[in-house]
Length: 395
Image (cartoon, rainbow, N blue to C red):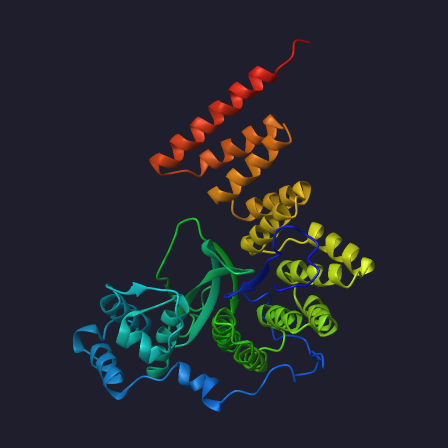
């Protein structure tokens, strides 16, 4: 962030989590949001904040295109969710992935967008034929990007189309069958929690708010974040973004209130705690600093890329032990993330811990499938072995 009196020689980064898994599947507990001032953020035009229904609008022609396919006589023996899946695979075979948030109509017209855009289109089509939809966060290797002092982590969402058939009461398994619509599947993806339509709408608003923040439109980002929290008052990604916006406005006290609120209502608070720690340091709030550092050490956040951000940040602050801890937490969740294995091995070597570096590289080799990666890790292992042999002293 743009922070006066920076204490570190390298810029501090704040995390904008574009997509974040729901931390619980039940209704969130009653929450009284902080009443913080809004005068820092000018009102925007009403059309700048779309209604939820606008996300799912399709043109008449687009609706007819889908319905004609869906109601084909030759497909009627298939369940509805399978027919919808077939339509999507047919239409999206040439889909162009780009990190943009589009409505359902825009996505179908342009045949491009991000995974949220595709999930919006799937939902819009499902609504036309009364197919129940569910969502789940997945954590494969994300897109990681830096923009100024913002660290951008974009995760992935998987959409489920549930069968319209009732579960068989004579069977022990009573859950509905579902088709998983995943446009960028990876066998190493880690699954997060399921979440509902209101959380999904909050995620859409939060994505748009992050877009606005990247475009340096803090007013629009603020009001889109408010729209997200109207859908899901305890959505931690939006709470986190509000803390960033208040910090940018110079109101550290309001940022602190939102971060405290977020910690209270988040089961996986690593991203919030990491950003809150920056505010606590600027406020010289030693009690909060110690509490947050202890929380980060104990946390088992199921999003491994929150740990990537924290590890990277610790490295920038020359805090090697913290960086090692966070990389270790990341690799507990996602041992296949090569850049984390390499970073952790590098840190161990800087501490002359050859044994630990070798262990990390061997683990990375287990999750390497591409020939280039396998060769790279073998070469690094050989280098570590030679280094250890050269440093070995006679007993």
